[in-house]
Amino acid sequence: MDLKKKEYIDKIKSLAREKNAVIFAHYYTRPEIQEIADFIGDSLALAQQATRVDADILVMCGVHFMGETMKILCPDKKVLIPDMNAGCSLADSCKAEDLKKFIEDQRQALSRNDQRLTTNDQRPIVVSYVNTSADVKALTDVVVTSSNAKKIVDQLPKDAKIIFGPDHNLGSYINSVTGRNMILWNGACHVHSRFSLEALLQLKADNPGVEVLAHPECKAPILAQSDVIGSTQALLQHTIKSPAKRFIIATESGILFEMQRACPDKEFIPVPPEVTEGVGCSCNECEYMRMNTLEKVYACLLNEQPEMIVDKEVAEKAVSSIQRMLSMS
Ligand code: 13P
Ligand code: SF4
Image (cartoon, rainbow, N blue to C red; front, side, top):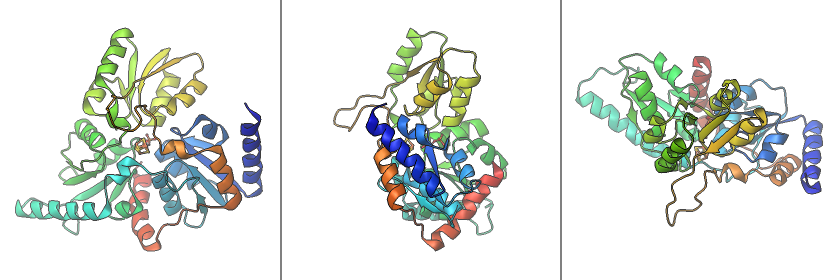
């Protein structure tokens, strides 16, 4: 560890103690961020844990929607996010005004077909992935994450018309495992939708019998080649519990740090993305997650900025869809 890094870590730890702050990190953040975090988790675990900690300040090292979700669930706490520009391509693929129109179009189409509608206000049930803005959550009936989507969709009325967004890959996967026919929004994560099927097939051929673990945001052909499909936490748990020593991993590469830390004697082989000419980086890293650096965590704790603020009216509408998720999980 070089001195600069150690200095930052010491300063962050003492500031966090002094200010009664708790540091949260998602598995896709840089290794050094995961090292200083008090709590590391998938989207569901981070949201659940935020409601349980006794702290004045919550520092969310992840992306914008994670900080927003935390603030909505903990309105009396100060929620800091090291970089406000840490967005999410998937969340960005679904703007609230577009979703509002989509819901209305679907409602009208269903009425025209004289189909039985299932919610009181005569509109389909709107299920949104947690990777969405607070404005989208405010239009949503129930939020899901990749670890509870199947469980929650299974609990919805069997004849319900359901709109699922924004991740089309996750929605298709949930349709296939629940036997539902949810109407899907056409959004995607730029990291997960780029894993190369050709490279995966080659890895499987070179490593016969090695299990493939994939996040459900990957495209259907990748999922069809996978043995275990789950949230970051579920994939990590599988590597810990499995007697196998080698795994092929199709998700953002940040998770490899935690897998290797938990299983130092095991080997993890990342699936590379397709290489598309003219398209930014061709690695399996989420550049938004990587915006969290030790320097920014230190600065945000020191200055108590940038602070996550969510419009009160939006938060009041969004909180019920998140609370519903927590109670159905
Ligand atoms: P998890 O809930 O599985 O951690 O996923 C979050 C995410 O952003 C995946 O791209
Ligand atoms: Fe969003 Fe994809 Fe990054 Fe996850 S990996 S935060 S879905 S852009």
